[in-house]
Image (cartoon, rainbow, N blue to C red; front, side, top):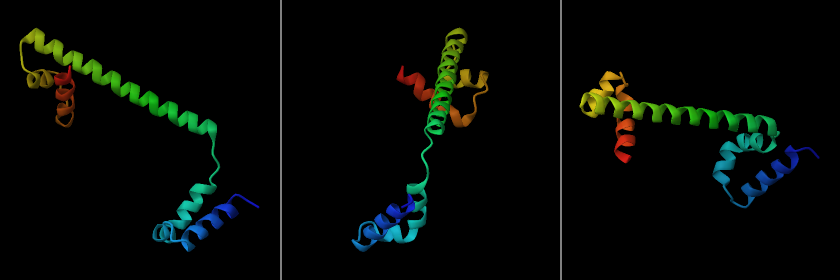
Length: 104
């Protein structure tokens, strides 16, 4: 008996018992694919490490940028908007930096 046999039986039983029937009738093949996919531990670890690394880099960039904003504000005696202008911070990121600085 292969991996797909128990998964297919489970899906069919759920449909017969009205357990997620509509969803399984519509997306049963996708669920089947998910259930029978081989788990690759090494790939899972690699992906988790990459995601953690990217999150750490983003956090480091945010910390460095907020420090730079505060330093400019203190050195030039200007407001947060002028400091972000000086650093050429994109408009779409300014709310996040204001939030971080105000939270401190």
